[in-house]
Length: 245
Image (cartoon, rainbow, N blue to C red; front, side):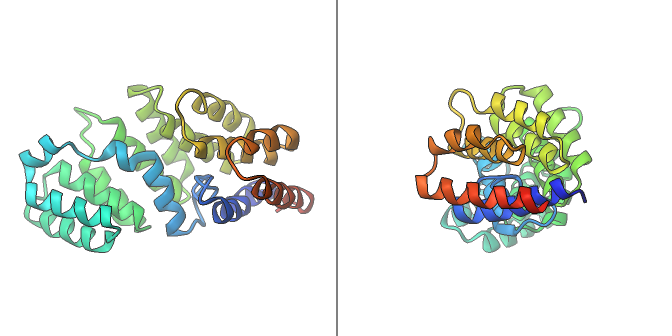
């Protein structure tokens, strides 16, 4: 691992802790590789949870009680029970892609990455690809440290929906973990336009800081984070740069 990548991972964990999860996997969304499950949950929730939730109509077509019960548990924060319910239904309906996708999303939020990849792969239909499932698969692989696979899934998702900000964000952060900060910066700038969340802007500020563009990073971060938090983050990121992570 290069010193820059080490700095990115360390920054991800630190920034996620003090900003509420702004990175790549851990970097608020730089959460990959050595990221905590909590970071993965933040990554998946912001990027995919809302977008990938199946519609009420689809739920009624499959198993209303199972999906509705699991979704209610998930909303309450009881993801472990939600996952147990979904896995029970999956055993009864092994070919149900909607159940598989919901299982994969909850497993991803819990940091159970192998289970998430398996369920999301079962949910993926090559004949009828869905950008949300592909993006979630990218997130699962990125969180496992498999950046090349993650990037391939993110790119497939973007081919279906080029303006999906969460997917752009997560792909950019995957590039950042590999040390390609220029590409990450370009993608995050594209993702930070319009109605994107503050988290995307936090991630862009992180990448700018890792690239040594501290003034730009501080100015951007000041628009979405408390001043004291911005100052603390800048001090930390500068120290990482000096020590090489």
